Image (cartoon, rainbow, N blue to C red; front, top):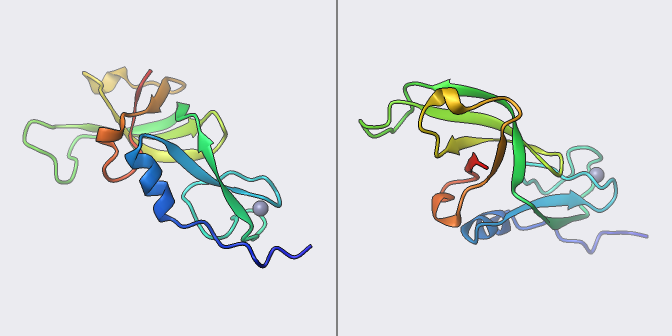
Length: 129
Ligand SMILES: [Zn+2]
């Protein structure tokens, strides 16, 4: 069965979903790989037969770093936390973690979830909880 009639997922759907506070990732219809960042081709098997899958937005901190001189920060923002978040569905996403009072609050294995839509202007952002 040829899948040549399939069109690759439109990357703008990823951003449209974020604007609604949803995390949508492409899933390969051949090998079932769910991946990030969105691409027109499966990174595991090379197939272009992809569909969009809605993720829970929940995950845990796999790894993180604290950036004490974030680019473009306001004078009041002296640090930011960037984390590799492992989603419940498996993919890992490098994204800021917000809502922390102090950088020492971030921990490996800490539960995080996608931040509200209003905070997702440029890409995925996570917060504790
Ligand atoms: Zn695949």
